Image (cartoon, rainbow, N blue to C red; front, top):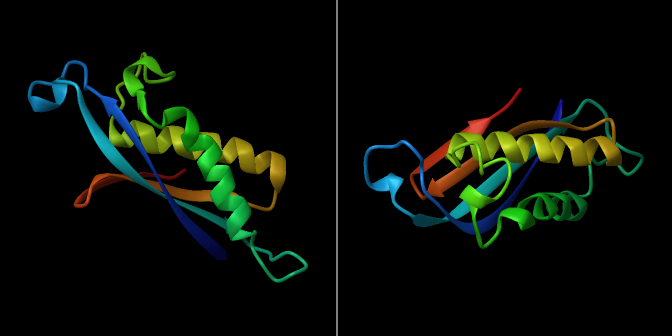
Length: 124
């Protein structure tokens, strides 16, 4: 199995509804996102996928979240915008985008850092 990993970032604000503590208040993060995709086979050039294309696809997934108040952006208008839920959302959106591009590829994992020392990941 071959795996590629790319990173990107976005900034946003949110508050955690129902949380008892500082995170119930409006606050922001500079989120760092790592997305890994895998394939059992390589293309005719000997690559899993073009890094540049994968970075662009991840950027397209993150753009609707960038510089937004996440509590107003679906699905986070109903679902708390926790690092865990954000990782799952990005995973699923990237999975949809990859399905249209190259059926050989699978999203392996998405990891989201809300700070330098705290992250959450999602995989299926």
